[in-house]
Each structure stands twice: as structure tokens, then as C-alpha cells.
Image (tube, rainbow, N blue to C red; front, side, top):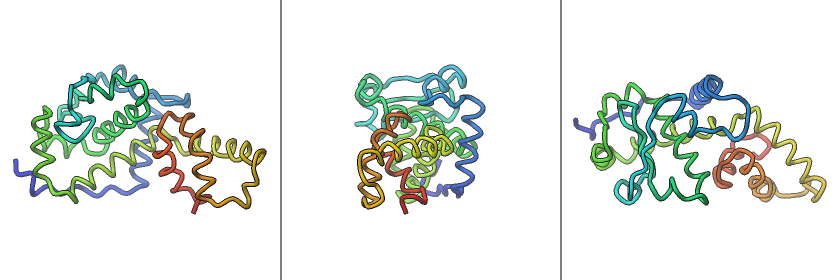
Amino acid sequence: MDYTQIQIPYIGNLVIKNKADLFRTKYWDEILPVDIEKIIDVNLEINIIPLPDLEKLCNTDALITSDWKSLYIDKDLFEDERRQNRLRFSLAHEIGHLVLHKNFYAILEINSFEDFYKFINSVSAEQYRYLEIQANKFAGHILVPRNLLNNELNKELKRAGQKINIDNLDKLLLKSYIANPLAKVFGISQESMEIILNELDFFK
């Protein structure tokens, strides 16, 4: 297949959010953090396969096959307890491809990391970036339901207000201050939480 001619279908932010919410409602409840690994392994019956040096070989820490039966994950990431938040986001990202790009991925015929390596080295950087941005947004919505985020955000703002004067605090500093405790609640990195908080009107 000629990957150089690939055109990534446009998917709007609201569509991505709605698809993520529907997926989570089907497979999970409101217990935090969302156990994406359990959803993949038990509910979707997709094999999670740790692969040595995946990140070094393909410049990615996870990839899902076009038949949706296997999800390869970098072995070092999978086994590193300190990087579990990164692992969870990477797994959710790959499920984003399943939900958002199922028909498109079938055309790609990616059934091994060798196929994936060929794909990422042939597709244009711009088109690949579109694909990854969509999956990242999906992962953010799966792991951080916005209704629950609003509840937790209000709690953290109240706690912060008991310690510091948040009314006079720069929004950038306040975001950084509360991103860490919120990230722990949802089981994602502080950096990912700050990106999600950027979407909220409160921090604009």
C-alpha cells in the first residue's frame, strides 16, 4: 500500500468527546482512575503484548494492530511502576485509534510493528500528526471525564483557597499548583492534566 497518499479523515473535538463518553459509559463506571488496561484485556479481549525496544525501534511506546486483536506496548514502559500514568495514557491512545479510526486502520493493514514502522516512515508528518492528535484527545476524554473533572476541580480550588489567595494568583501558576493533585486523582501525568485544564474557561 502507498502510505504517502494517506489522508486522515477530519474528526471534530465534540465528536471525539462524545465517542469517548459513550465508550467509557459502556465499559466503565465513575470509579477513578479509569482502569483502561482492564477494559482492554477483559472487556475488549485485546492481547496486551510487551515488546522489548518498541520505542527505540518505532519511536512509539504502543501500537495496535489493524485486526484489533493485539496491542503492543514497550516492555520497559509496561514494567516500570514509576511510569504507570504514561502507560495508561498510551493504552487509552491506542483505543482511540480503535474507536475513531477503525475503518481507516483496516485499510492500513498494520498487523505487526514492522508494518507500523513502514507506515510511519512513509506517511507525511502532517497527516500522521493529525492521526495522533485525534487519538490523544480521545485518551484525554476517556481518562478524564469532564463532568468528574469539574467536581474534582472545584474541590481542589476550595482546598487551594484555604491555603493561598487564589483570586490574586496568576492563572498559569494556579493551574500548575492544582494540576498535580488532580493528575493523581485521574491517574495521568501532571503535564497531561495541564493540557486538559487549558481547555477549561476558568484558565483562559
